[in-house]
Image (tube, rainbow, N blue to C red):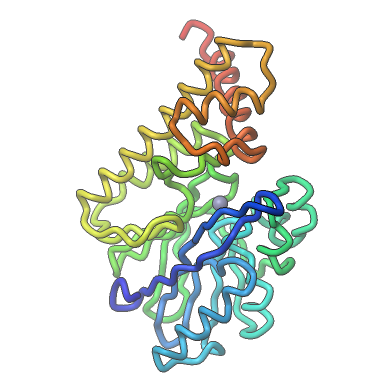
Amino acid sequence: MQVTKRIHAIKIPFKVPLSPEMSIDRFAFVYLVFGNKIHLIDSGVAGAESTIWEYIKEHGRKPKEVSSLILTHSHPDHIGSAKSVKSQTDCTVFAHKLEQEWIEDTEQQFKDRPVPGFKTLVEGPVVVDRFLGGGEIIELEKGVSCKIIHTPGHSKGSISLLFEDEKTLFTADALAYPGDLPIYEDIFACLASIKILQKIDNVENLLSSWEAPLQGQEKIFRRMNESIAYLERIHTAVINNSLINKQQNIMELCQKVVSELGLPPFVVMPLVAKAFASSLIAEQNKQIAQPDA
Ligand SMILES: [Zn+2]
């Protein structure tokens, strides 16, 4: 679907197998910026390139015109088809330095973060050609520029992108959607990142990976507030439940928190438990930093 003059969104559905009998349906949006060339923001899971090529052809353009692939971070639903995109277009691959290892060594990513179905979601590694830090403006082609905003928390090197000319902000997975999987590495960094995004003026289009494009400044501000409230609710539930029973292991704690948040039982999984464990560490570090608080 077309969002602005230049920007288009494609929804890529995929399945995450939880067991031989059960899988969950997920999706992630990838975005295209049409100029003289075509610039892709995230690649979607393995195989998504055929959906992207089809979309490009439907709009009278050629996949070979893709000259940039900006990876917002290294998770499978963002880099899964990057290898094919790179090999079929020879585009420049951009990512934050802190995501390099898991993009260039997907075996290592699987060892460190064994997402169910990882091998079916990720084709393989791709080399990052240009590193992003945050704060810089990159010119993708003459007249098409975007500002890079470092928004850590969901992952260390997560980035958001601001296309000022199109009044459009890409937040990837920086926002947490009430009722959705709580996945983060550093809850306080997540909250700080959202507050940075909220301060950006004149954003008419919010483009994230887990929700259809949202339009209107007020709606976008409210969406970010809901995201902050959801993350705070998760963190409070984790801390309160950890205090009730100090003997429980992290999966038991995960089960209690998921139930208190009213999330479906399949959400009790190691990936979510790991996020909750990071909440406990973040809270301990906060207490050490502010002993009288
Ligand atoms: Zn992610």
